Structure formats: C-alpha cells, structure tokens
Length: 221
Image 1 (cartoon, rainbow, N blue to C red):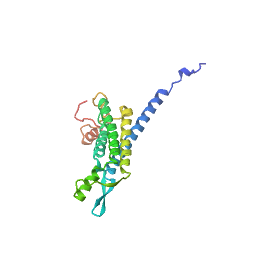
Image 2: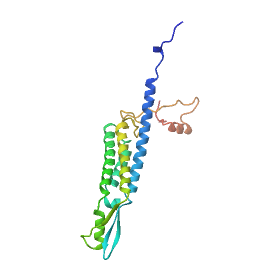
Image 3: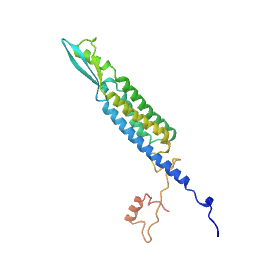
Image 4: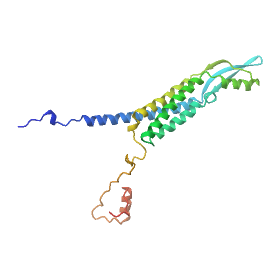
C-alpha cells in the first residue's frame, strides 16, 4: 500500500498569491477612484467659498470685504480639473503612458495643495477690492482673517496626491479601456457557438441570434 507524501500534494500557494494580488489591485483601483473623485470635487467646491476676510477704512468707518478662493488663486481649480482628467486617462493608456498620466495626477494634487496653502494668507485680492471700494489705489485691507476653506482645499488636494501615488504603485495591474483587445493590441477571437441541429442559418431569426453572439453570419465557415 502506497503512502501519499507531502511532496505529492499540490500546493495552492501560487494560486492564492495570484488571488491576493488581484484583490489588492481591485482595492487599490477602488481607493484611487474614490480618493481622486472626492478630492477633485471638494477642491472645486471649496475654491468657490470665502477664503479671506478683512475691513477697509472708508470715511469715518470701515467696510467689510471678503475674497473667494477663485479670487485669491485659480491654481487649485485648474489643477483639480487636470487631475480629474488624468484620473480618467489612466484607464485609456498603458505602460509608459499610464506612468506619465499617474505622475501628472500626483503632481496635480501636490501643486493644488501648495497653491492653497500659499493663498491662505494672501492679501492681494482683498487689497484690490479695498482700492476699488475706496477709490484709492493705496488703500489696504485691515484685520485680515482666514477661513478654514484654504485648508480644506489643501486637504482635498492631498487626496488627489494619494490617488496618484496609488496609480504609480499599482496602476500597472489595473485594467484598461477596450478590454476586447489583448496586450499585443490584436482583437480577441470571438467564441462561436455551433448552430442548433436542424436550424437554418439563413433564417432571419438565426441571423439575429448570430449577430447577438458577435458572429458574422455572412462569413462562410
């Protein structure tokens, strides 16, 4: 009577490793899409909110002034749009193209965050409004305060940055648009089904069924 040795038992480790890798790719893909979409949306919304507030002296009193993020700097909004486009383009390209688009997504997030932080204490937009309000080009805003929105914009920009880093790290294994095509660029062969016994391939219903299966009914077998 023979004995089954440990060496003769199939080891499932490679299959499990492949499954774990695929699961990790799906998780990284979902995380990048979520972070990138949320980050870009919040940046666009936050850039329209009031970033800075202040007052300017007029006559014997003062007038309150405020400036939205788009008045302070348009860089975060522009880079959020670029980052969102890059996030979509990641799935339209492969290999070196995917790396470059992922890098663009990463840099868009970093640039938007830096621009938001630099614009948090910017006085130029409010000083310009103070000059228009008073009619004095030398007028300057007083009691400048910042709202939380520049920092919300910076935090949302970091989500774009993280999405880009995920794309750089795991993007090579993500799917691409045009799944019908193989890695070499050639179309995948369609699976054909044999006609049912006794079915007339020239009948209209059989032609429609062949088209539904992706077959060319005019092609002779």
